[in-house]
Length: 619
Image 1 (tube, rainbow, N blue to C red):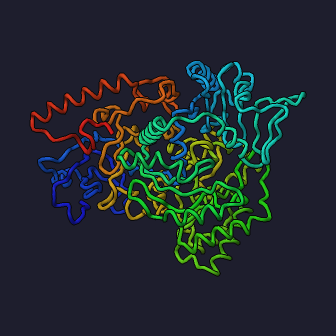
Image 2 (image 1 turned 30 degrees about the vertical axis):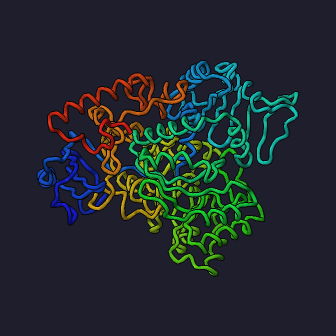
Image 3 (image 1 turned 45 degrees about the vertical axis):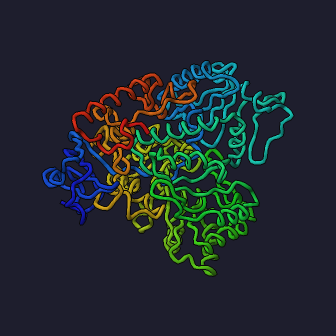
């Protein structure tokens, strides 16, 4: 048995009779794990770990299921996504366009004015049985009166006629810089918006929609965190995002954190919002906060992913690679110099090798004057990075956070650049061979789904969500290595590799018990895996099936017309019992029942259930 020096004391909780993947090379699989004070204190076989049981220890039988360390998305827009989750109709994983249009039609009927129906990314035409995009005629037929905004990745958006009226786009509206309003022969907008060469037109149009009131935004963020918990996610590194202003748009997550209502650990980076004023943004923030401020559940992580707008090379593979402005080096150099002087870790969005080469020129120039000297920094994405530039990343002590954007855009990349280029896009195996830190994530919620199992499928099977093969064996990861990228690997990117990512003594007690054995199911079934029990810091935050009785019931979805209340998030079909939300009346009935059960348990002298916070499981 592997145990900490304090393991002689009784455990607060023990999970046993499982197949627990620890990602500890000395003990790769164990049967049981013991928890105390929010961390693991012992792992090993059932007999040895159960010896740590005391009179008040809660014991949980995993019934032979596979458990893994809690998943850690190293690049997700959780804070922004949480503020808007309850507004969004998710097409993630929907199997047919007919189903997607049915959902749009139903949601349009229940959405009150002046609200919109918003389908905001996380899907691709190649996931549909029809293998095509919806047409504008289909969008207008499904939603004739309610504004509908349908975002596809970061390449285009489809607006129905009601949405065009709501945003005020007419024949007299000029095309904004970096975007195109598609028009008919008479010059009237058709409803198609094209991101060319960047996504500003998509950001700006979506921002015109009505926002939720503050109390609904808190509810929305809790629902999104619970949805991530349903998929086994326990940690996330937030990459900021367009129209996500600091500190204003962080007030909701901070309020939830103060009340102990966050169920995903969040390390957040600050994303500049003002072109040509990026240096001023970061100069202000350096005086307001610093990396490491916070705690294990909510902490400041540094700068990025946007450091300078002139350095943004958006990843629309339907369009040619954008050329960065000649001002980029000066704009980026000023910001990076400020960050290094103040010892702020940073991350930078970087899709193309040509851009990465120029970024590295800037970093190396700053390093000669002010040595990075171990300062943590990394590129996000790096789809077409070459080995020469990877050598430069390694020399400067950087890392690469990769996401499954190619699972959604791989077909477009193949059409433009060919199969040979796609086979190493991104070259994950080469990064690992060179010893560069690599973390995994999704870049959700707009350019890809937040479902980590789709990302793990992509890394191991080497295929898009539509089944198109991209990679040979030389650029596909084994299942254990892919899982390591999504756990211990991602922890490096927030400087927490010593405390999370493995099931081992001293590590934070975050884990997910899975609906199927990730290590043995056919690779196509990896995408369908969920968690049936998710634990964060020794506290149950999600349960389903045989573990549903341990789970905190979700708060009722607000507003009542929210698509989340009808469909949940990542596609669950029409199975109400599988959804990550509970109808308000049902939640209230459960809440009262749980209190009655607890009253009975107290009279019998029993302690409160395994690892829970509030005694009624509510949070």
